[in-house]
Every structure is written in C-alpha cells, then in structure tokens.
Amino acid sequence: MHGHFALWFSCHWRKYRFHEKAKLERLGEEYEEIKDEVAKRSPIFS
Image (cartoon, rainbow, N blue to C red):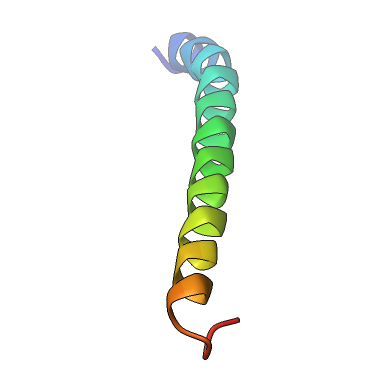
C-alpha cells in the first residue's frame, strides 16, 4: 500500500506542481492587472 501510494504521489506531484505553478503565474498576471487598474483610479497606489 505504501509503495503504491509513493508511486502514485510522485506521478501526481509533478502534475500538481505544474498546475500550481501555472495557477500562480496566472494569479500574478491578474494581480498586476488589478494593481494597474487601482493605480489608474487612485493616485495613492501609484
């Protein structure tokens, strides 16, 4: 059971890390866009 889990985990970990990285990069891009919007609307943040 443990060996099987380790095999499953190592296989899924790569996919999981890849998706997490992509998600974080997308979030980062959205954050930059939001920051730009906020900066445009209020001079305090720029």
